[in-house]
Amino acid sequence: MNITSKIIITDTNIITDLYNAGVLDKFVVLDNVYISDMVLRDEINDRTGDVSLISKMKTVEASALELLEMQRLSYLERRLSYYDLINFIIARDHEYILATGDNLLKKYAEDHGVEVIRTLKIIQLMVCSQIISYEEGIHACQLLLDAPSTRIPRQKIIEVLEEFQKEAVVE
Image (cartoon, one colour):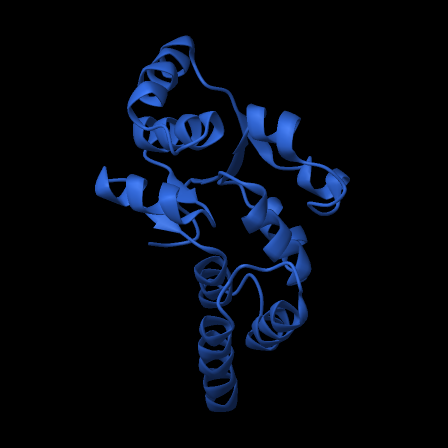
C-alpha cells in the first residue's frame, strides 16, 4: 500500500481526525484522494472540519449501475448505510483504497477484497512518502491524543507516535 494509490474517503471520521491532527490540508491536495459526491453533499459540515479545505477534494460520482448495486446490497447488508455501500462499490469497481473509521464497513470491505486504510496509516504513509516530516507526524499524533472526538484507540496513537520518535532520532 502506498499513498499514491487512489483513495476514497468514506466518512467524516477520517476527515475529522486528519483535520484535528493538522494534516488534512496536505492530504486533500494529493492527486489521488477522492470523496463521493454524496458524502461531500450530505455529510460534510463545520463540525467535520474546514469545509472550504474539504471541498478541494476531488469528487467521484456513482454510476447508475453502481446506485442499483447499492440498492440491491442494502437489502442484504442492513447494518451498512447507503453511504457505506456506495463507497464500498466505488472502491471495489475502481480499485480504490477505502479510507474509513467504521469497523463494520472495514470488515465488510476486507471480506470482499477491498483494501482498507485508517487515519493512522494515512499519517504513516504521508511520513514515509515525505509529504510530512517525522516531526509533523509526531505533532499530528500528539494532536490526536488531545482530540476529544477521535475514535482511534489511544494506545494505537501512542504506538505510532513512539515509532515516529524513534525514526526522528535516527535521522
